[in-house]
Length: 327
Image: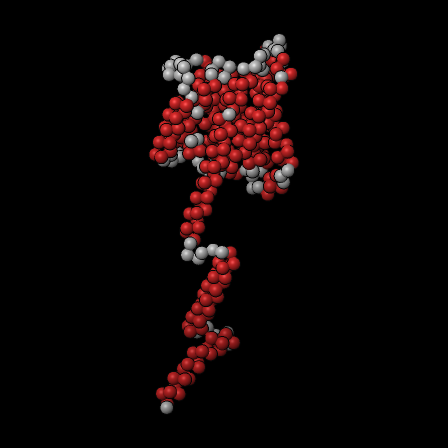
């Protein structure tokens, strides 16, 4: 009987000790252990409730993380696939402009296309609260202007050299030479110290070989290079630098703001080039201005391979490296 009484007393003290210790601001090992167990049980119940409310699997955290990364990669590759389709029509549209009687000069074409591309950004900027997004960005406006200025330089060199090269180089050969940036971009990334996996090199080689077959035309197998070929190849190199730098700084800015800033700088560069060209050749003909077909081709090249492709390019390269994004 005595032993039973002592046992009941111990149980009562053990059950009531946390409350007693709390009431008298006393902390015993038993009380501390009970508080820890109580806190852990409450946290577990709260976590289970949140998982049920949000539809999450508590055991699938790692799988969810992998799935999120996979979705981002899929989104990036999908956007860059659309960019490739749009860029594939650029050479054709520009070459069609040169096929019309009395076509514009390379400087006039570039300036007109640049101004049209800037105008294409106006409705996009008006329909988005980009000013609020820019104000909430950690990057100052000076950084945005500097980034847009640098990208405009690389884009101006790439597009300007291509526009001049297309005067004397066929569209099929120009398409092949332009897409040598598939190989040039990974080389630039490697020189800059980035890791380029072997699968990327394999994909670049296969893409370049496929382009050589698809772009084949009589005389394509010739090793000699004309002046237009070298200019087009130089444009491909500048485009590779553009993509490399975009992959480094593009994630820091809103794509609408950065691409609009870059396009505005680009238009200024093209207008300066056009002004110098017009000064040196005051007898330049402008009969192409009355051609509706020329304006339609220029507008498409500014909207599709220009404005839309630039925005998708920056969005896609938030998830994909420059080397992988080329193919």
